[in-house]
Image 1 (spheres, rainbow, N blue to C red):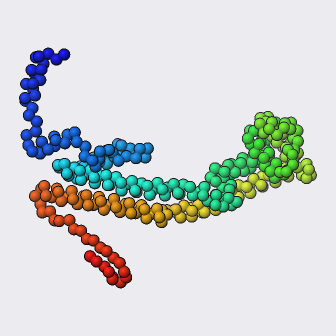
Image 2 (image 1 turned 45 degrees about the vertical axis):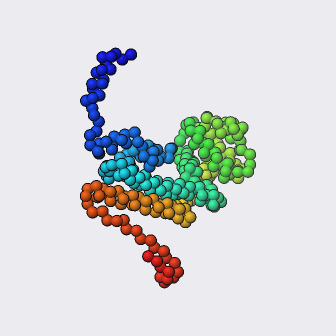
Image 3 (image 1 turned 60 degrees about the vertical axis):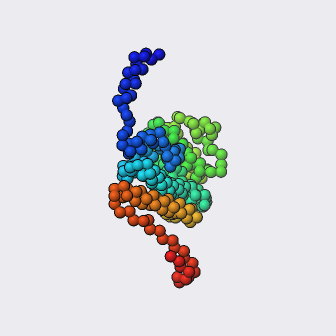
Length: 308
C-alpha cells in the first residue's frame, strides 16, 4: 500500500509537468494513442512478406517526405502503402515468370515424351555417368591382374551393359564364381578382374565371340552412349531455352490484369503525393496551385466525338 508521504510526493512532482504548451505540441499529444485507419494493420501477406521489411519501407518513405501534422502523416503513410502495393505487383510478375520458366523443362518433356523422356538433367547425368564408368572399367581390365578386386558398382555397370546389349530378352547368363540368383548377383561384393573377364566370356559364348571381342564391343557401345547423351543434352538445351524465352511475358489476360492494377496504384500514389506536396507548400507559405484534372472521352474515328 502506498504511504501518505509517497502520495504527496507524487502530487508535487505532477505539478512540475504541465504537458505541452504550444498548439502544435498539444495536437501531437492528442494523437499519442491514435492509429489512423490507413495503417491500422501492417499490410503484410503472412508467409510471403516480412513485417521488418514493411517497417523499413515505411520509415524510408516517412524520412523522405518529412510530414508534419496529422493530415500530412496520413497522406505519407498512404503513399507508403501504395508504393508497397506497386512493389508487390512487380514481385508478383517476377515470381510468376520465374515459376513458368522453372516449369519449362517438365512441360517440354510432357509435351513430347517420346523425344525427351530420358533427357531430364538428372537422368542425362546418370546415363553419362554409367557410360563413363563402363568405359573406365573395361579399360582397366586390359592391364589389371585377374586377382585384383573390383568395385561392385563398376562391375555392375558393365554387367548391365552386357545384359542390355548382348542378351536383353534372355535369362541372366551363368557366370562361374558369381551367384546365379539375380538379386544376389546385383548385391555380390566379391567381384575381381578375373570374374569380370569370365562374365565377358560367358556372354560371348553363344555367339562364338571371345571375351576380348565382347569387351571391345561393349566399350564401343559405352562410347556411343556417351556421345548420344551429349547430343541429346545439347538438343534438349536448345529446345529448353526456346521454351523459356517463350515465357518471358505474362499471358495476355494476366498481363492486362497486372497492368490495370499497377496503373491504378500508380495514379493513386501520384495523387496522394501531389496532395501532400500542396499541403507542405501551404504550410511553408508558398503558392499552392490547384490540382490539374483533365478528363478525356474518346469515341468514333478520326477524332469524331472527342471531348476534353
